[in-house]
Image (cartoon, rainbow, N blue to C red; front, side):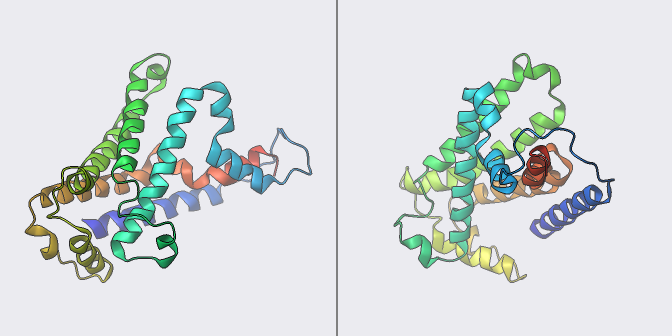
Length: 225
C-alpha cells in the first residue's frame, strides 16, 4: 500500500501540473505592488507567512503558522528515522525534535481547523472534502504522535529508532521487511499511522491541498508577474 500511495501521489500531482500548464495563458489584470518589487521573494513571503490572513484573522494565522512549522519539523524528524544527518546534529536534539511537543502542536492546530468549520460563516462554504482532509490528517498525526509519546512521555521504550530505521530502509530498497517492528508492544500504532498516511497521500492530489504546489506561482501572478 505504501508504494501504491506514493505512485498515486506523484502521478496525481504530475497530472495536476500538466493540466495547469495546458491551460491558456492570461495576463494578470491586477498588479498590487510596484514593477520593481522582487516578485519571487514577495511570493515566498505570501506563501509562507500568510500576511493577508494575519490581517484579517490573527487567530487563524497563529494556528496556520504553528501547523506549518510543526509539519516542517516532522519532515526533518522522518528523514532522521532513515539515517542521521551530521548537519542536524549541530543543534543537538533527540528524535523526534521537540520531544512530543511537535506532534501536540500539529494535533491542536488540526482540531482548531476542524471545529472552526462547524461554526458560521465557515460552515456555509465547507464541503465534505474539507472535513475528510482534516480527519485523515488528524488520524495520521495522532497515531504517529502516540508512538513518540509512548517512548518520551510514558517511558515505554519497546519501539525505538533502531526498530524504525531497518523498516524504512527496507521500503526505500524496494524490499519491505516489517519484521523489526512487529514484535513490539505498540506496533499496531505504526500500522495505523502508515495506513492513514497512505490514504492521505492518495487523496492529496485530488483535494484542495494541491494548492500548496502552486502557492508560489499563483502569488507571483498576483504580484503582477
